[in-house]
Image 1: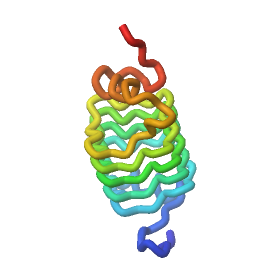
Image 2: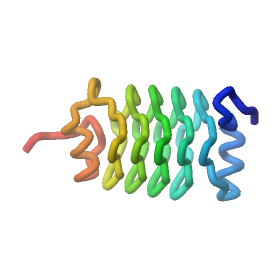
Image 3: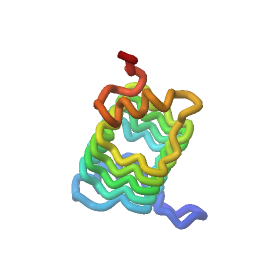
Image 4: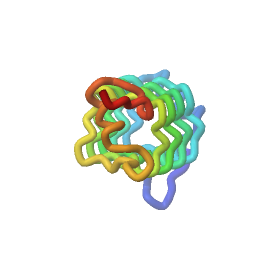
Length: 137
């Protein structure tokens, strides 16, 4: 673990696994560029954490607190954000195909609406359909 110029503690996959096993908070952690695929962050406090450029494919973020977290340009395909708090989160340029945002709080979140239709994202939030699978009735 090291600190970068922003003061966030930088975590590797191994350190994230150890923290998850202990039930520790991951708030204010820097996990940028880490390969975190298929990890379970259910109910974990990840406020103000940096997942930029990280691989979080098929991760589970059910009921996780991701307030003000950054997923800028992260690979989030197949991730489950059901009931997660993504308020003020940065998901701009995140790859969300196949992700589930069912009942997630996306208030004031930056969304990748340039690459994914807003209706598609809202369908995932309202109905639980995976992003990229929206079908207009």
